[in-house]
Length: 280
Length: 258
Image (cartoon, each protein chain N blue to C red):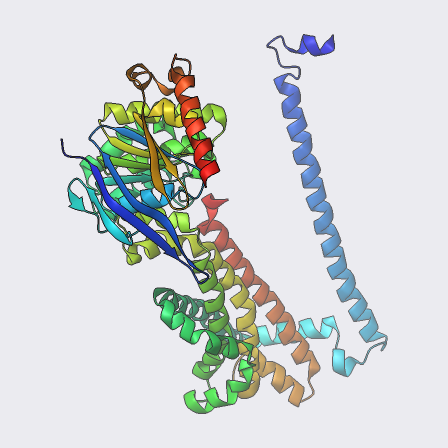
């Protein structure tokens, strides 16, 4: 009987209660987000509190691990004296150059081998070998070639990022649906047009996501490069702190790297969301 | 009358690492202006291969393909091709998708763009022009694909099972729309389909192919009164079922032979 009554043209649920359901759904979601955020914050505070207590009560070796109040005091001093900014600027510059140019050159190389399937076949084993090599070991060679400074560190970073970018982006070029390519071909489209109208826009999300991966890789390349050679930068501060046994300096540099690297990553995520807005 | 499409002794061989197989064997075909011809047959009879050869996407191993009296060397704007699915680019708006053919042929002038917009209006898609494909239903998307194909004003349309990915109701509506549109604009069309009732409902001539190797088995002419009716109505008319069963039986016996 009740089933028959439903079909009167009037909705069983009035509009207001639909909206109420939606509102309560939003409220539940907001509550859940707040819960996650507060637990995350609590964990962070607990970590620093435990570190501080463990340091002050000598549960851990203070010389090695330092403790937060010392670390923050160190950061504060370096900020106030202005010494930090130079180091930070150099490292951020090298990292940004590393991941932007790494992605750019990697993509250009991918375009080149997409254009010539013959070249792609020829280069394939060399790229695989180069990709599996520990490129950081090439650092000393780059230092001798390009001098001890910005250029050799950036090149070290590029050696880490370029080939893997090429492999990933080329792969995504090849995986573009052949029917989308056919759409362009049936209008008499040339290979250049196929690339510009289909291959490149279709692979755009992949290129952006390699940018994200390269942010992390670039930090590795830059810090290692600075270990080897630099007179400036956060990697230099770490190695310097280690040499003079100032582990508070090492810890404070690591903390700054964590914050700046996260900031950079979030910037790329933000750019990704802006650029790929309508695709999802 | 000059035929729009003329195939002379088309033979095509597919070569793979394992073998070379004969897909089409000495096939002759003529399609005249304004005709709507359907190619039907079992899978592997080379229907799509034939369409690709007419479109210029594939060069036949032997024989000649002529469109409007000119030998087919590659895809040209006089020939429109509609694929099995819409394959709209998700990063382009509906209008940008519909006008990609104009971009590719260098005709993005005011007049051509305005014509594309009016085609979208004819298909009832003017409100969706600035939306993205993901926001449209399957039937709407295939209508956009039709506008995309018509935007360069081709005289000949090649339809490669354009209704196969749609649900039944949408498919019937789109059959009506396409056959009306093509008749109105006086286009010539070649449709590849595996659906016999669709072939009979929309076309003037149904060509049955047999497989291994692909050859023309028999050509059926659709009676005038079914031809003139809209595809949805045509299915109700007398003679429709008889023709359907005749083609069906012929296809069965072709299958037994192979």
